[in-house]
Length: 273
Image (cartoon, rainbow, N blue to C red; front, side, top):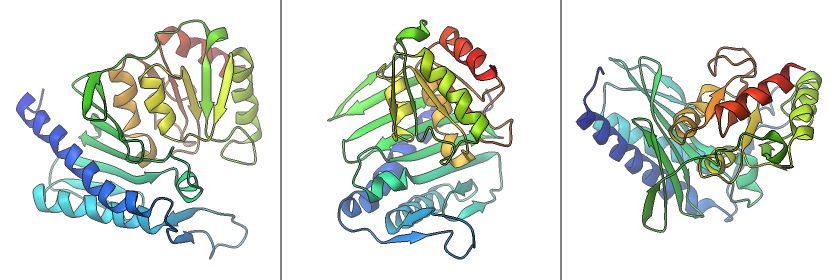
C-alpha cells in the first residue's frame, strides 16, 4: 500500500468535513428558490442542462477547504473543471448530483466526493443532506450514517434477477440513452421484478444498503461515478461498464452496478442481447 492506514483515516475524516461544508451551502438553498441557469442556452440545438447556485457555491466551499488543507492535491469538479496537483492525489467532486431533482424539490440529489491515488479509487462518499444520510467507503468497507448512528452495510445479496429491484435515472432514448441503449436497458428491466426511476446517485446508496439490486446508467462523467464505485464495492456489490470492463473504459459513460457478481453477470448477458 503506497499510503498508511493512518493517512487513509485522516482523508476519510476530511471527506466528511468536505461534505459538511457542502451541506452548509446546498441545504439552505433546497426548496428555497435557488437560482437556475441553463448551461446549454448559448449552444443552438441543445436542450437543457441546469446548474444552480447550490452547485456552484457547494463546489467553491469544498475546493477552498482542499486548497487550504491539502494544497498539493489535485481537484476535478463538475462546475469548475480540473486543477492539477503536485502529487498522486486527486479529489473528484459533484456538489449536487441530480440538479433536476434539486430544482423540483425531490430529495434524491446528493453530494459526491471521491479521492483517487494515481487514478485509482481510494474512497467514495455519497451525502444526502435533507434526509441526513451519508455513505462513505474506504479500505474495502462501506458505512452508512443517519441521525447520528453509523453502521457497516451490505447489499441485498440477491442473485435471482426475477426478484430484482432495478433503477435508472431516465429509461427513454430521449433522455440519456441512445435507442439501442434504451432497448438494452428494457431487456434487463423486463427480467426484473420492479423498476424505479429518477433517483440519480441516490440509487447507488440504496443499492449499498440492500434497498435496490441493480442500477444501470450511461452518459456519466468521472465526477458522476468516481464516488460510486468504492461505495458499491465496499458493500459487496459488483460494478463495471455494460461490457464488464472497468467503469470509464468506454466513451459512453456506462455503469452497471449490482448487488452480487452473479446478478451482475446476468444483467451483463441481457445487455449484450
